Image 1: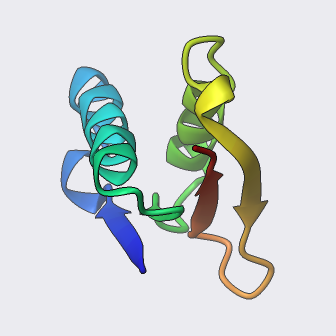
Image 2: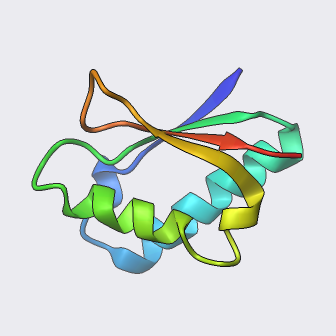
Image 3: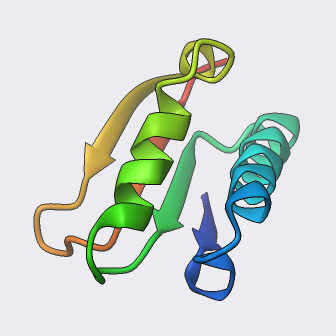
Length: 83
């Protein structure tokens, strides 16, 4: 099972992006879902960079063990959570 977060709707609202990322990670941990799919879209790559920076934050990094960029789809990131 995996949870999916599509960021197309909030791509230009920084605070909402961070809240959406935190909410999906919290939901996955609560439901003990090990895989979160984040879709920043292809675009210019700025939203994807923002997501990757968010995942590197010291308060977020301990929550997962691996981030995987989809080699077949540039606009998709998989986060493998730890419990």
